[in-house]
Length: 596
Picture (cartoon, rainbow, N blue to C red):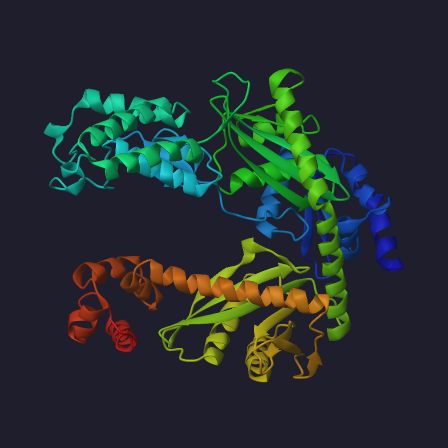
C-alpha cells in the first residue's frame, strides 16, 4: 500500500461512525474483495490498518485501496446485509467452502402411500410438512444402502406416480399394490411407517428380527444361498448404520459446532446428534480474514445455505452471539455452560484442535508454495495475477463440443464460479469451440459488469492464444491471456503470452505445479460434464444441446420418437409438427453423424 493510499484511508477512517453496520473492502479496480460486519464500524475498520496482520489478512490489506460502509440500526440488520452482499459479490477473501455439495438425507414422504429415497439440497420450510427427513448422512453409500434395505424389507411404493396396473414389485412381495387401492391394508401400512421411523431413529432390532425370521425360514427350506445373503445383510446393518452412542437423552436432536484457531487458520468440527446418537460428523479447515466470531457465523450460515437442513436446535461456542444467529436462521441457538452437552462441545473443539495440529505444517507449506508461485508468475508475466479463469473443451462423437471454465483466486479454486457451456452444434473443431465460449463468457461479463479476471488461460499454443485475444479485443476488454503449450511428450513446458512470446517453465518449480493443477482441474471438469451428459440418457441429453429445443419441445420429441434412430428416419415435414424448420434441419444435420 503506497503512501498516497495510506493517507486517503487514514482520512476516511476518521469519518467512520461508532455504529453497527456492514463494510466492504475494494481493490484498485473498484471490485469488492471482502465484506464484513461490526458492532462498531470505526473500531473494526481501524483494526485492519493500525495493527500487525499476517497471512491471508495481510494479503487482503495489501489489496485494499478503498472501503465503503453501510450503517444499520441493529447488529442483526448488519448480519443480513453482510450475507446479502457476500452472496451478491462473492468476494474472494470471504470464506469459501471446499465443497458446495450438501449432505444426503433420507426422505420418507407423508403421502397416503409413502415413498422412501435419498435426497439432497433441501428447502426446509418448503418440504418439512410434506416429508420426514433423517440425516444428514456424511456417507452417501450408507444412505443408499439403508434405503435399499428398507425397500427390500418393507413393501413401500416404488414408483413416482401410481400406474394403471400392478407391477413386478407387487408380484415379488416388495409393494402392497398401491395401484389397486383395494389391495392396501391401511393398518399394515401405518405399522410399517412406524417401524421404518423407529429404525431410522436408531432402533435396529425391528429390521434385524425380521431378517432373522426370513433367514431361518430360508435355511429350513434349504435355500442356503438366500440364508447366507440375509446373514450378510444383518452383518452389514451394523456397519452401514453404525452410530456412536453417547450419554445423552434420546430425545436430543441438534447440530453442534466446535472450533479451534491458530495462525489465521480456523478448524471447525460439526457433530450431528439425532435421537441422542452421534449420527455423523463433518470437519473443515479454512484460512480466514477478520474476527473469529464473524468468520464462524459466516461459515455456519453458508453450511446451511448449501442445502443442509437447519435442525430445531444448534449448539455453538460462547464466542458467538447466539441471539443474532438464532434470529437469522429462525431456529434455536444454544450456548451450553455445563453438563453433558458442554462436554460434547468441548470434545468437538478438542477434535478441531487435533485436526488442525495434524495438518498445520502441511497447510503452511502449501500456502508458502502458493505465494511463491504467484510471485514467480508475476515476474514471468510482468504484472500481478489474482483471479484466473481457465477453459477446456471436450467433444462428443468427435464433433459435438462442450466446454468447462474453472476459476482460481490466488491459485485456490473458487468452485462457486465454475461454469459449463453447451457449444453450438455447428462447431466442428477446438478453435471454433474456444471462440464461441470465450465470446459468450466475456460478453456476459461486459453486459452484466461482472468482475473480470486478471488472466485467462487457454490450453494450447499460438493459435489458441490468437483466437482468444481476437475475441477479447473485439469486446474492448483489457484482460491478459496466456496459453499453456505442451511439448512432444504432451507435458506442459511453455507459457505463450498475449504477444505470442514463449516463456519457459521450470518443471520443478512451484509455478509449474500450480499451473498443472489448474490444467488438471479444468480438464476433469469438462470431461465430467461430457460424461454426465451421456449418463443422463443419450437422446434427452442431445436434445438439450440443440439450439432452439427447450423443455416443452424436448418432451414432445421424446414422446413421439424416443430414440436417435427414429429421429434419423423422420422427415423434415414430420419434425416441423413439433419444431420450426430451421431447428429441425439443425437437429437432423447433427444426428446423422451419430452412431445410433
